[in-house]
Image 1 (cartoon, helix red, strand yellow):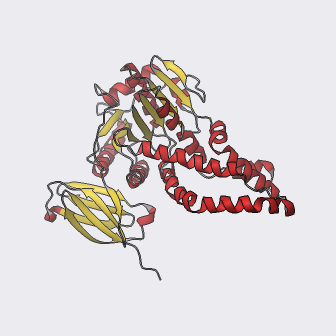
Image 2 (cartoon, rainbow, N blue to C red):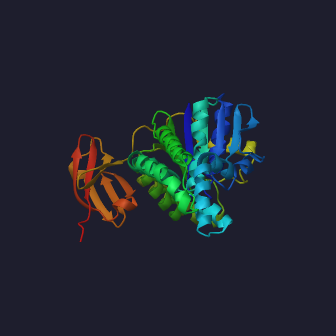
Image 3 (cartoon, rainbow, N blue to C red):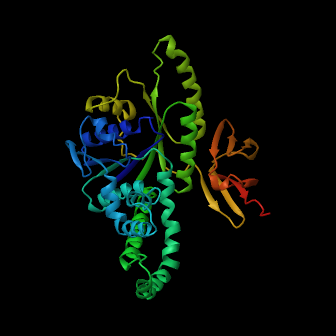
Amino acid sequence: MRILLYTGKGGVGKTSVAAASALRCASLGYRTIVLSTDSAHSLGDSFDLKLGPEPTPIVNNLWGQECDISYNLDRHWGTVQKWIQSLLQWQGVDSMVAEEIAVLPGMEELANLLWINQHHDEGKFDVIIVDCAPSAETFRLLSFPDVARWWIDKLLPIERTLTRVARPLMRAVTKMPVPEDAVFDAVDDLVGHLDNLQALLSDRELSSVRMVLNLEKMVIKESQRNFTYLSLYDHSADAIVVNRVIPPEVEDPFLYSWRNLQSEHLQTVHDIFSPIPILEIPLFPAEVVGAPMLEHMADALFGDRDPTDFLHHGRAFHIEQTDDGCDLIIPAPAIDKADIDLIRNADEIVVRMGALKRHIVLPRSMMQFQHTSARLREDSLSIHFVRPARP
């Protein structure tokens, strides 16, 4: 089985790229499911047909699915949500407002992503392609089990025991809703599902993330930040897809300056994401809607390549925790120390290695850290950061 996740800023064409990839996989004989975790529900529009919350046949070997948020929330969060909702209503919150507040931030995206678990466990498909919501938060939310697991292991048993003991007394003196054991079971079950999901998406022999972007400064900067978070949470990106590249043969005077600007931005993309492969898709003269145009996009994107191939192995960089801070580890094979130069610019580290240059945006948790040293170790460069001293 292969899991491919397409992510990127809204409007860059990631849904079309995911749909084109799925169509190509199906044509190669893979049983393929393409599902959208984005509440915008544009996957069906890309195929020019209606998709539902369950897998819907599109063509031979291909099924599509647009996740239903209400159904998924009720399935994975319903028990807990009902208790929180009743607690808020007891506090005098309007029922409709309570229903909205009872959903934790990000639960919609997480509940949709849990379909990956089901499709993987059922084994009906060879390839699972995910059109992710347009936000790095989708991947940052996958760190939720790390925090929730401590709470469940350390505090949940205590809270469950105290609640069980106090429940009869509280019901005698107050009408405040007291959580039943089913609420604690539901939280534990949810975190278990998220643990499994996190394991699937961080499995480098199974899953790859492919980031889609346009050659615009703001899009590139956001993609750079997203890439940092992917690396931080140990998700493997094996390709960068640059969409809507103006072809060199276009001679329209209006597009000439745009083409020159795109050339500059394309070099920046190579500087940021090297050695990850950069795949280019040209700007088409017509909108990419329907199977024929999606096949045209797949030809431009993959050529004779199989979309399920691992296009890149290894990590561009990763972060290791230390006693006093952390180390930023960057692959640096066959590089001499004299050929390395570092520049810190606010939230960004620029690393020059010989003729190569890397721009790495630091995660928010490291922006206040100070880099104190850098050293070569084996085939990598280690940059040490220390936490700021507490006042």
